[in-house]
Length: 361
Figure 1: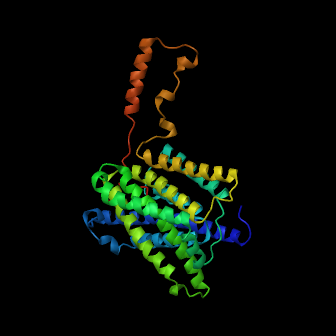
Figure 2: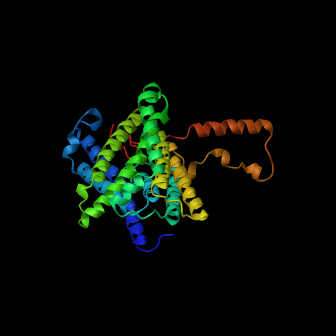
């Protein structure tokens, strides 16, 4: 699958992508710990407009960790296929969830543990079956890729859809339909990843002494990246402000990753030489990660463990002995079971969001 010198680039990109997830996932915990420490001291909290966290070293450690993760993620696109790097971003959610259970006393229920396991399995499958992109070593080669008719049509379509969603659909339905703002973030995110890929190549050329700064494409990519990222942040924050985070996060992950996979297939031809088993493996791994992220977020406030599985799963002693209760006894048992299930405690957490928006309220 990965041969020659590209093999080493692949592994470098893989290590960078995984390092990015650990740094970013850990940064949320450090920031949260710093904010909680300030709350115990009686300082005005960030959710109330306070800025005392600027004097807290744990918060700064989290910020530096976040910066290191973003740099590693940026560099990963220069070495590994976007089809691999982008889905691995889900590991930051997994790292954050696991560390929260240990350092913030946030319970990771049975759904969450299964979700973490599925995310790890899906990521492993994607790494094994990751596609090999066409070699693009210089900005000149990247400019030819960007000028390919297929990519021009795709980019034009993305821009038109984004403008329609921003100026026509957004004002009318953005406050009520969760897909509007998420769609804007996702389709523009595909272009931002392409810009990151090009800038990564430019930086590699800069290190070997090429006159990159005189190449107009480098500045076009930089400007486009700033516009795309600013738009993404704006509309993602709107979506998180209006809708439930546990719903926004998995939907955004699916939409964004699908957009990036489509863009990479068109721009870098990552899927052209893939065998059928690698295509099936990549898609299966991606779908497994989606299920894992959904389980991790959708049921995070349900206190479900192996010890308190729904009592309807527990067999009646007489049923196990082959004697079924009469209809009146069965009705009584069902009524009692329903009462016992409704009495199961539901944890509220400590106002944490496992998608990374860990801010004290």
